[in-house]
Figure 1: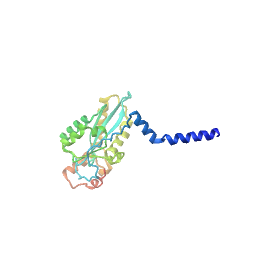
Figure 2 (figure 1 turned 60 degrees about the vertical axis):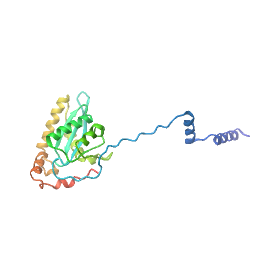
Figure 3 (figure 1 turned 180 degrees about the vertical axis):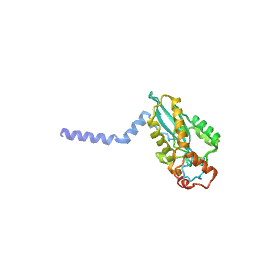
Length: 232
């Protein structure tokens, strides 16, 4: 018998006696007492994902999101932006080097004390928004929290649009020398945005003026609310 034939014969005998592929791997795992570690399912926050319609009034729905930047020294910071989806007002723009779920809850509590309770809050699944502290806060305050679908940032389009404008007009054009300086610059920009900046979706009036018009006449300028649907 040739060497080649002997090799083939030996290989055939080995294959017949020894399982190959996945079966062989499972046998070795069993013999060594090993276990295949199962992936833990990712926790999904409790909240609605249904499409939403809201009334044309302030506080009908708020959107939350973070935008990131860095100081002149290179240290990074983030800004929690809260936007009224109907009036397009920036209700809060909170910069800090670290913002936890508990901090978000405190800021929302303070905002509700100043402005009143929202009918709904929209956000992504960021860990700050899905933390136990945040979920408990929403439950205790009887707030409906709508989580957008993963990978669909435009379902939070109002806050995303605001973030883009802040990025283009402020963050990309500014050099921040520290947190206090950033807070001052951001607050001044937000005041200008709310009080003096005409907004095309609001009939070219500033967000604060539009909010005042809705508060005095619930039927005025209802057209923009017809487009508020779309987070599901």
